[in-house]
Structure formats: C-alpha cells, structure tokens
Length: 301
Image (cartoon, rainbow, N blue to C red; front, side, top):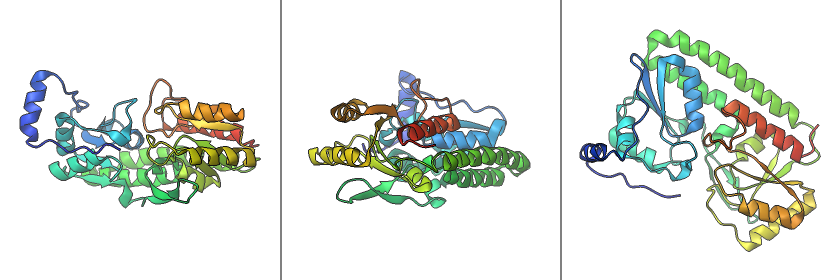
C-alpha cells in the first residue's frame, strides 16, 4: 500500500492546481441536498440508497482505480472538509484518514466503529492481517446501512422519515441477497476456493467457505514460490476446479497457476469499484454474479 502524506497549505495548493486545470472536481452538490463524501464504492452505494435524492455523493476513488493506494488531490481534501458527512474505513485508505484529521468535517462515520475489523489467515504459516473487506458480507452491509441512516437523520431530521423508508427498502434487498447466498451455498461438493488476494474472508466466514488466497490482504503482494506450491497441492487435494481473479488486478498469476493444473479461471469481484469489466452495474448485481461463480466452481446445488 502506498502511504500518502498530505500536502501542507491546502488552500494555497488548491488555488494553484485549480488554475492549472490538473485537479478533478468533486461531484457538484445539488441545491438543497446534503454533501456526502465516501472513501470507496461500497459506501457510496449504501449512502445513495439510503439518502436518495436528499444527498449528493462524492466517491473519492475513481472507477477502475485501486482504492488501497488512493492519493487525494487538494480539491478532494477540501471536499472532505466541507462535507456534511464523510463515510470512510479507517486504516484502509491512509490518505482519507489524514484528510479527515486535517480538515475535521462536520460529521464523520468510520465504519470500523460499527463493524470491528477481523484478522484472517492469509498463508500456509497461519500469518494473519487485518482484513478491510467488510462490505462483502451482506449482513454487515445491513448494519452499516442503518448506521448511515442514523447519521443522516441526525444531520437532517426534517427528512428522517425518508431515510427510514429508504433504509427499509435497502434492508429488504440486502437480506434477500444474504438469503440467496445462504441457500445457494448450503450444499456444495467443496467449500474451499482459490482467489487472487485475501479479500473474501468475511464472505467465507458468513457462508461456511474457506478462501485460499494467492496473495495477502493487499492485492499487490507477491506470493513466494513456496506459497504457490502450497496452493497447487491444496488445489489437487481438495479437488478445486477454478482459480479466481478480479477486475482491478492482473490475472496473469491466477492464469499461470490454473494452466499448470489444468483448471479453469473465473472472476470473483471484491467490489472495490465498478468498471466496464464488472459483471454487473451495482453492488447487488455483482454480488449475485459472485454467487453464480462460486456455486459453479464449488459444485453447489
């Protein structure tokens, strides 16, 4: 992960960069709406679903960009400071943490205060690391959606009934997604699956699966030859059929391992952002595609 030190004198830098035209502007706030800034797509999805037309959402991570390595422009730092609410996940994106500390927005929601992060095993030695991918568990998303609705209702009590109604519709959708996973993964020939990096610990834990990550929690970690050999041995032992890769990371290593063993490859999306390669255009549709991929690879019926 690339750690980014925010530039000092934000106001002066902002003025200079604006004149040069080098900084992308945040989403223009619609008149009469709350400005909500989020660190990455899953929280943009929740905020927009709960807030509806009462809020304007700015996602600090551009589509196709790796959110772990986010760096912020001065304009984005200023947007954090001027927001009515900033939703972020502490430690996942250090640049956002620093912007929140530096600009002190009116209201913030650090999702890790609602869903504490867990350590998940990432290699054959049992080494662990904090897993930030809490959004891949639909049950956790329901909990976070309620926290967002509470925040918006506190900031804007006049429209609290709207946020409550929107939360109800979103909760129904997410609960349906959870039920689809519970049913779809209840009877499988195998529970283990191989994926590019250790993004799926919460999903695996929720639905009785076991992820075998090629790399660690951070997607740019290179696995050792011993790790690759261990994965190959596990794939043979467990009868694994598929090596999963994802849309924001090169599939080269996954493809190489699969070809060596005569296995298939497929996409399992950590939903850190939406791109043209995403198998869906929003969180629920991509989660549904992930379920289809898992049930096919693991022989579920």
